View 1 (tube, rainbow, N blue to C red):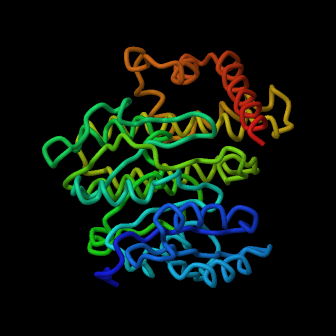
View 2: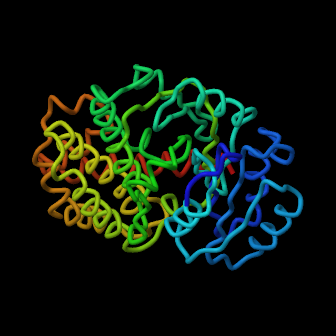
Length: 348
């Protein structure tokens, strides 16, 4: 269960129906870090219930690159990542989605920062389609210790789409194993955020790195960007599960969690209720939005929000919900859903 002296970083890639993109993800690692010649990194692919030729691609990659290992798990990204954690030999873990990839020289950047930063968690900037997100510029401070790490967690919770994903981060495996921080296999949406929330709670040092090391592919058909009936219920379930982990935390964390919940309300409404693929009439979408806003976990967060705390445009439709201006709020969500559709369509 514990790390090998030889392997420094384990890259964990869940692979579900990823036959067309998996090679790109793997080779962005092994070619960046000369992985076929070095023993200090490993790439762990976890195939989890694919119906295409993903496993055949896995076998080909293991034959070509000795640093690549393949395993199988039960279906679900959390099952796959947990299997990867248990099989990993590295001191450090990096999660990579099969439809994404690392940018040039990323592995060497990671190795250098691991040596110099000596933190429990390193956060990096990333490319989101054609947009570059430098989180250092957004969050400001470079390093957080036990005295001020809570302030960083507050910022992360208030901006989950920027900070709470598990990719573009480096985790210390010893902490994960010692504290049994595994992915919740019953959460199917926002499992990244739930995991990061629990892991940051046990960190003593956290570093915000200026380099961009990861490319997040907008052209992929990830679960979050695919319309599915009843997915809102999964968001609600995820919020209720994560809420249990902050029950005994500070007032600051609990207040930040309310914004975290509202950010996920925004995501659920944009990605599901008002998304272009949802063929329901606008009136029906408004009615469904009102029902969702009355759900206990969302209603309490909406009730607690104050106008002075809503300086960003993204919170405008939430304030309109608070004031029962449902039609105006729905217009904004529908517009955002259309903007997402156009942006992601143009990347294909």
